[in-house]
Image (tube, rainbow, N blue to C red; front, side, top):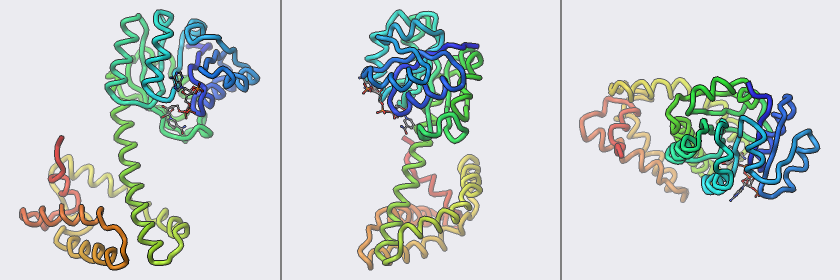
Length: 287
Ligand code: NDP
């Protein structure tokens, strides 16, 4: 179990990570391209290194949290052979293929690689409200799990280095799919003259019904059997007509509703009108 750790990258997230590790008693070395960002962490007890390579040399465990994969490539390029024998934990957001490329880079230099993806906000680092998804070297994960758990809720997705990024990309996509629908809905609410903030408060309690629905849709899609969740498509399609014409009558964009209605119509035309909303999955392109 490492008591020493290096953090490369002291933006909002990297600083929150370094601060948490310092507070939890780890001897922490920090480096950042703009050196002035080291000062608050040095005040809190960290040691600042002059270069990324020096920072890497100082600890067996190296945590990287930079803007993007371009920054990671640049910084790791400057570190190069100093990484030999270390465990590299990269918490920078990015794709599965970037994670796999980083693993290759580390393994060519005799380092173990753990890819990490963060879901949550910097002020909550160190609490269960920030989720850290990991994949890659199991021995590295096992050896450093106690330190990683200091940062938040930790889930290990297996040895395939890209797995955490696969999950991250899907979770982030889900967030945006839901939130763009929410913004479309706020436009409707505002067009009707209602208070969007008050509506948001009310809708927050009605979305409590979503988790069981997500589970049942997941099971329906997996099995390929589609019970009439939310009612049959025949009934839902009639409601969609009302939703679309209402939006159009007050001049509010109906693009998302038309997408849903079009899928319902095609499914009904195919003879599946008795099935539920989940059966629209059959019409979504595979790749
Ligand atoms: P910031 O913009 O606050 O910090 C970016 C960091 O990257 C800085 O340390 C910056 O250095 C460094 N950097 C950028 N380009 C280079 C480069 N070419 N060479 C060296 N260093 C570089 O971002 P965050 O700290 O907020 O985010 C870091 C990572 O964490 C991102 O991948 C982000 O997606 C992820 N994340 C962030 C969340 C958030 O809410 N903030 C939530 C979940 C994930 P410098 O100070 O010199 O500019």
